[in-house]
Amino acid sequence: MPDEVTIARARRDAREGKAPSTQAGEFVREEIEHIREGKHGARSAKQAIAIGLSKARRAGVKLPPPKAGSTSARTRKQAKRDAERGRAASSATPSSTRSRATSRALKKEGRSAASHNALAKQAKSAARKRSRVARSEQAKRAARTRRAKQASTGASQ
Image (spheres, rainbow, N blue to C red):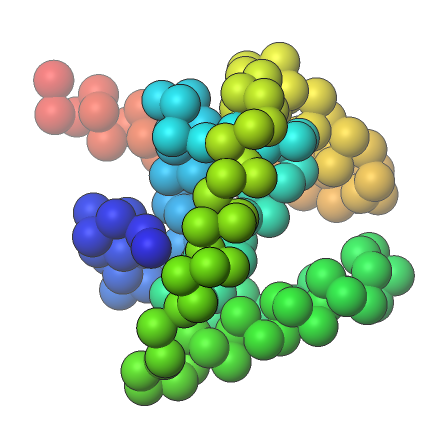
């Protein structure tokens, strides 16, 4: 279950009109923090991100399932299920046996999945899969955001 603070941040992002992926980023950040503080581990940075995205979908973030070809059919099916669960008014309590099994399995995994190195490596490999034009557009967008942030902090000082 995500923290109340995380849900509040995601809702604030939604109110501000930010993209669903930005809203979901709050849940991914929470998951990375859980791993770093030793709550549980993950096999890879990719798994940590996947857990965060799953939690986001279940919390009602309108994040579409991944496109065909980018992931397995099983992953897409699960993402679809998570999204449906997020739309439902109230859901049944999760199976305590299954929940405990998942927690115990994750506790046995390493903590290096949330390291700066692992996350940088994951980001780089994800970026490499995108086209040159898409990478360039994203870089321009990031530069615009940086300039806007500098302008707003510079004005307040």
